[in-house]
Amino acid sequence: MSDCIFCKIVKGEIPGKKVYEDDELLAFHDIMPVAPVHILIIPKKHIQSLLHAQAEDTAMLGRLMNKARELAKEQGCGESGARFVINAGRDAKQSVDHLHIHILGGRSLRWPPG
Ligand code: AMP
Image 1 (spheres, helix red, strand yellow):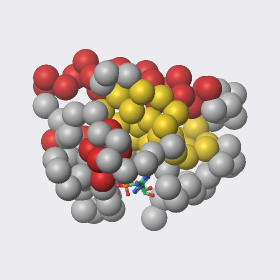
Image 2: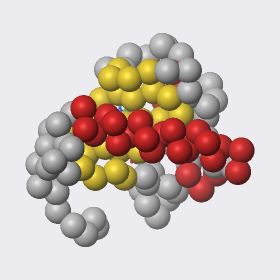
Image 3: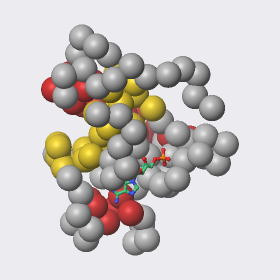
Image 4: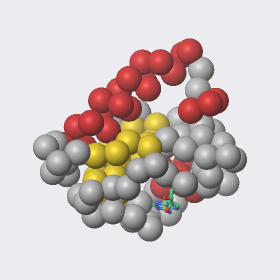
């Protein structure tokens, strides 16, 4: 997707503060962090949202979740905890239409969300 911000980060067309990259996945710091740990992990493949993922994406989604867990632990949240958030679509206030998991931690988070 030529006009997708996260695809542009994948292609190196706009900067991203990367914390992990492999052939399939990319993780980088959120530009407007809401917690001491706020990382986004995405598939490099453009998928609009979790609601748009297909059966063929199943294995990738498993690896995405595994890597999200590893990164949360690397960021020091293994004992204190972390929140893994996927906003999908308008009602969920998804603002970037490229599937991503927010990894949030480093402080006590409130619940429920608004
Ligand atoms: P969501 O509202 O779930 O779609 O989350 C999108 C997230 O992307 C927000 O937390 C934004 O702060 C973040 N974001 C937007 N543009 C960038 C960027 N260029 N680099 C890093 N994070 C970004």
